[in-house]
Structures are given as structure tokens and as C-alpha cells.
Image 1 (cartoon, rainbow, N blue to C red):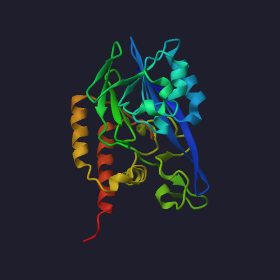
Image 2: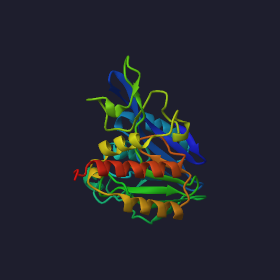
Image 3: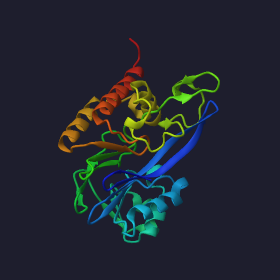
Image 4: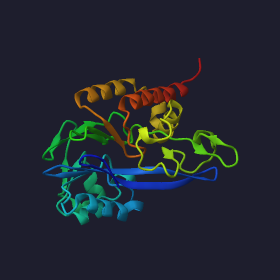
Amino acid sequence: MRNIAPGVFWLGGCLSAYSAGEEVHYHVSSYLVVGSRASILVDTGDPAHRELVLAQLDAALAGRTLDYVFPTHPEIPHAGNLPAILDRYPMARVVGDVRDYWLHYPEFDGRFDPRRAGDRIDLGDREFRFVPAYIRDLENTLWGHDSGARMLFVSDGFSFVHDVPAPESGDVAIHDVPNSDGEDEPVHRPGQCRLTSGEMPEPPSVEQAAYGTGKALYWTKFVDVSSAFRAIERTLDELPTALIGPAHGNVIDDVDGMLRTSLAAHRRVYDAARPVK
């Protein structure tokens, strides 16, 4: 667990995979935002980290209850620990685009509060706002923004990989390693967990971001996302943002630089899939 900003805790953990015989890690992150009146958990983490996430929540809340859980969408890394968290915190309400959650979790029917993009929750000394997911995995994905830390939570958006060492042959990027386990995840080396993008040895390159984007979000090969990035820029103008918190990948503390890198990566993925004329 890392207190990444005042009132914001970076929870979850890393899963391990192997590339060319070398261990690599990838984040499965959750974020707890604690205000003076209420708290909200963004994403629930992977069931492999269930006990870890519950212990982190207890420590970060320090005797307070959890008021809201916001799974950005109903997929295992984002909602897989929802039953355990709702059992641990019986007063917590599930918020977001919860249109089908009662089908997944009928035992918790009555604890789902629908929220749409633009809706807000007053946490006391800060406000949490639901934001359209301009880069999304599922149809009912939403993003979120915390005014206190000026942090945007982007679910599967803004993913990138870091170079992975190849055995006995120097360094190569993971996209050069065939048949590597976990190659569709934004991976990093052991020892680089819980670092911000600015704390990494080198900032992510367009090539690294393009690899992560093309693998994790296959639809980006067929969609020109230029209009989505214009919408993201308008959102950043409206909601001042100092940090970006992806579910998979390091927390981004160079927002302008990563915005340019990610847009260039999406364009590269899209252009590479176009037939050569």
C-alpha cells in the first residue's frame, strides 16, 4: 500500500509472469479515496490479492467504515473482490454503471446505486465525480476523478509496458519476445512496483505504450481514437489533474507527457492495422 497523495491510497498488488525465462510483474491496482465525511474504493483488485486488499483497506481506513465501492466495470481485476469487500463492510454501497451487477451478485441486490457520467459524490472535503470512459474495455466502463488529490482514475486506459531483460543477451523489449506469458499486460520488472511513471528508470516510450495498447485493447486496431483524446483533453481542462491512476500500470505523474505518448501510441496501433495502399 502507498499513500500516493493526501487522502488517496494505492492498493492492490502485482501478479507475476515470465518472459524469455525472466520474471515480470503487472499491477492490478485499486485506489481508496478518503474524505472527511465518506470514503470510496475505485476497483476491487484481483481475487488472488483478496486478503491483501482487505488488510490494506483496514489499515488505510484506520477504524473508519468503507462507504462506497466503485468497480469501473464488471471484470475480474476490477470487480472480482466485490463480494468479500461487501461482506467485510456491510454498509458499503456499490456505485457506478451497475446495470447488470444484480445478475452477477444477486445476494447483494439492494446495495447497487446507479451513477452516470457527471454524477458526483460529496466525500466531505473533496468531491468524487464520475467521468465518461473515453478508452474502455466494456460498454459500462466509467472513469472517476477526485478533486482533493486532482487524480483521474482511468481503469484500463493509459497502459504501457517496460523493457524486459532477455537471458544472456542484454536487454530487449517484451514485444520482441515471442510467446511470452502475460504479454498482453503492461508489465514492469520486479523492484519497479508501486513507482510513479516519473520514478521509473526511463519514461515510457511510444513503442512501449503502443504494444500495451494493441494487446490489452484489441479494438484500438480498428478505431481512430483522435476524437476520444480531444474529449480527454477537454476533461483535463475542466477537471485539473495532477495524477492518473490506471488499474494496470504505474501511477502517472507526468500527465501532459503521458497524454502525448498515449495518443501517439493509439495512432501507431491504428495506422499499423490499416492496409498498405
